[in-house]
Image (tube, rainbow, N blue to C red; front, side):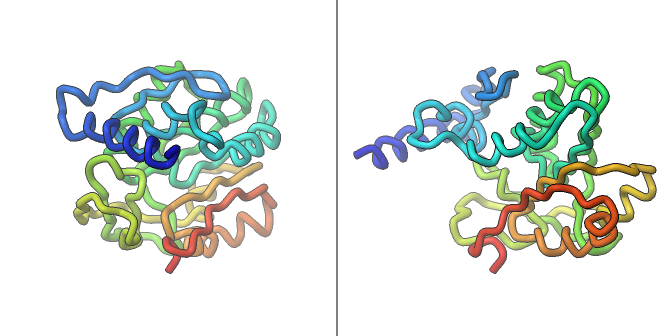
Length: 225
């Protein structure tokens, strides 16, 4: 019964996203403090349903990030989405630390930027390129509608039911980006790029070897397959 109620609640929530006049973002309090604009999509549903769910959305993961980061840390969010981890990290590393957030999906990046403005965060740089194992340009699967969080350089997995279209994005490696921008220190990486994680790690070999950051990385078979 609980799972049926959850599916029904998510269905009703997603209906907001299908009707532009109803898809007004709702400011929602985050479990670690700060505010999040919850749209009628999967990410908004997870934030809005945090305290109603049997287990809060990625609570062990975000609490690990919270424990690991300290004022002055440098956090790199690869696949920042709408900013759930970016917002947490920006609060934890202040006042002297910084966050570098990579989000190539224009729909999710716009929501990320709005969330940063809502929280008055100024210690975060948002980049529109995708990280991988090479520099250049690539076709990017932009998932539309309520499942924009699953956009990726990889083809969407079978559980993604929303339509997608191909757009061209810039690509680079983490090693190249850090060298070009003179970033000498990285304390933690969060990698969640819907199946492209191995390529991100291949493009970060020097960073991993010399800077030795803590790494939080999604590994899910249906994505990496």
